Every structure is written in C-alpha cells, then in structure tokens.
Amino acid sequence: MYKKIIFSFLLLGISLLSFSQINYSDKKRLNDGWKFLRQDLGSIWEAVRKPAGKDSPETVPLWKDVTLPHCFNAEDAVDPDVNYYEGPGWYKTILEINNPYKDGRVLLQFEGAGQKTDVYIYTEKVGSHVGGYDEWIVDITDAVDRFRRSGDAERFEGKIPLSIRCDNTRDTEMIPSDLSDFNVYGGLYRYLNLVYTPAIAFTGIQTYASVDEKDREGLLQIKAFFTNHSQVGDASLNIQISDPLGDQISDENITITEFTDKDVLSLKIPKPKLWSPETPNLYSAKFTLNSLTGTMICEEKFGFRHFEFKEKGPFFLNGE
Image (cartoon, rainbow, N blue to C red):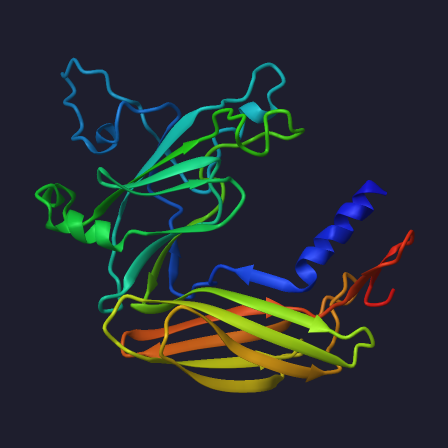
C-alpha cells in the first residue's frame, strides 16, 4: 500500500507541470582524460601546480586516471568489512574550448554530482552546488577569458585547466541524512557535458499539459526562460508541436524582445492521446531560437493525463 501511495504522488507531480533544463544539442560529454584524488588538497593550487621533479623532496598528491561517470564508493559501498568513504575527492582535466558562436557562452552541465561540489577554472572558483540528485549548470565563459589573458595560460598551451571538488562528508543539515537506508555517494557519478550556446539562448522551458475529465480537450501551456549576453535587441522563436505518431499539429512563430521568462504558447488540442504506464503516449515540442548571435534548437517531451483521489478510495489515472 505504501508503495502505491508513493507512486500516486509521483504521478501527481508529473501529471501537470514539467520544468526541465535545456536538452542542449551542441554539447560534448567529458568522459576521458580525468585524474582523481580521494582525499582533500591543501588548496586549489595543488591541483594546477607544476609537477615536482623526480628528485624533489616534496610530498605530492598521487592522482590516478579515471573516466566519467565516476563514484568514490564504487567498491567500498558494497564491501561488508569496511565503512564506505565519506569525505572530499578531487577531479581535474584539461579542456580544449572552441566556441563556434561569436560572443557565445561556455557552460558545464552537471547531470549529477555528490554531494557538495566546487568548480574551478585554474585557481578561480566559478561555481558551487549542494545536492547530489539534480542537474545544474555553471557558466565558465568569463573565467576562461580571464585565464587566457593571464600570465599562467602559456604553460597550458591554449588549453583550460578544470578542477572539481566533490564532498560526501556526513552533514546533519542536509538531506538525505546518514540515517537513510541507502548510501550517500560522492563523485561525478553522472555525465558532465561541455556546452556551447549563442549569446541569446534558452535557460529553461516549462510545460503545463492538462486535460478535462472527459478527455475531450487538452490544453498545453509553455513558458520559456531566456538569457541575452549581447547587444542584439530581438530574436525569433519557432515552436513545432507533434503528436505521439510524429505528425505535426502546430507551428507557431513568435518575436522575442524581452529576454526574461515569457509565456510563449497556449494551445488547445482536441481529443489528446493520454499517457499511462500501459500506453505511454508522448507529444514532442521542438524549439528553434534564431538571432544574429546564432541558432539554438532543443526538443522536449510531454504527456496528457488526469487524476483523481476518491475520498477513502483508490487513486484514479485517466478515470481508471
């Protein structure tokens, strides 16, 4: 019964409102070329310092090669004889950055990192995040430009040093707590993407899909979130909606002059095909944002369904 209740509330959460990060089309997964250290550093300088000579008396951290996704606890979490590691760990790599968009932005898209994360370009901290189960983004454009103008850039031959500190240390002020019945993992355990966008770009899309109780008419409402890092004053937005069979049912063009959050579409759809676990019908929306700074394209999925909690009775999805 408890599992059924949880499942019902999950459906409640996804039935109406969906807000997603952008599904970027121009991105590269940063899987290879990483080094990892399962301990803390004295400072970020130790991640980017010149290697000590073989006869140096210094004690230096011993990094090992890894690929992403990577987890601190891939082995010790399932070892019955030890407690799994809880603490900081560092990752570092060297990036080649070649943004195809003039005055465009360079982003790091984290699909998941546990549990507290700090991000550095060379020695400059460019972002932090708390939470191991959500997607988040760091804009590294300005930090990359500053590093390229610095006196330290020559040593890296045009490439950009990236360092990331992850920490899954026990913290009573965070959820989930250490009393949970699962491990609180550390590391870059989901994909990390390098993303290029034009100066005018999406930062998020929100879809609201609802249907009346008799399934006669669906209503789709879409809000888009924008950013503008240019002097360009306007952009054009094309939105194409397709049904679960891939047939186009709407094609709308909008002029964007204010780059904040904006309601961009309200569309009635007669007799929509409903989503359910047995018939997971999904509609698609394709967004094309054109401006003098470049073109950005993304696609999102959404579904129609309605629900009802009967008093002292079961949960109904689409009347069943």
